[in-house]
Image 1 (tube, rainbow, N blue to C red):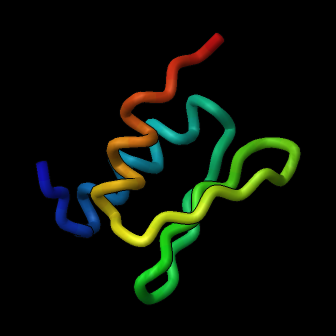
Image 2 (cartoon, rainbow, N blue to C red; image 1 turned 90 degrees about the vertical axis):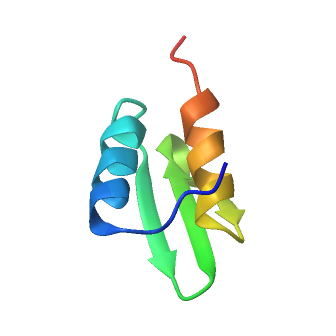
Length: 59
């Protein structure tokens, strides 16, 4: 599964991340998921970030 970084896909992912009060920060070639308590996870592809957020489950 490959997810292209498009404005629509980014909005979808941001909505999913917002369920966990998380933010997404993107720099050229680096994708960061910023979780509560300032934990930051780094990804080297948008697809990897997408899959990770898709598999998060609320407690």
